[in-house]
Image (cartoon, rainbow, N blue to C red):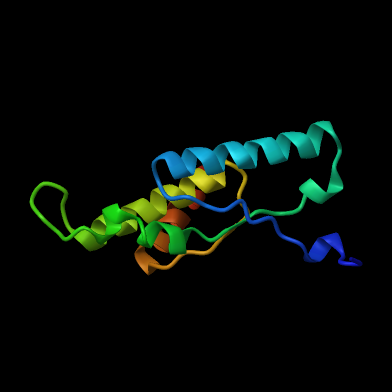
Length: 115
């Protein structure tokens, strides 16, 4: 196609917490292992993780606030931040997030790991 690899990103189809994130994590792991073991340059491009879209449409984020499961907004923020941290640990380089507090929590995690 004539597209330079420095303009390409891999979207591993992010799933929110639960089975979706386990599937995504294993896909990312397999891609990275193949990139290393087979020296496949096309699989060595960065991952883009559009997790904000997926997390906030999960049923757990849409359930109303109640005493048992807590505040709806806080639940969504934590789900987004935890999903981002999982994707970072799996090798994701670019996170697309929605809630500013989830971004702040994720930045705090990154800063803590780099300290």
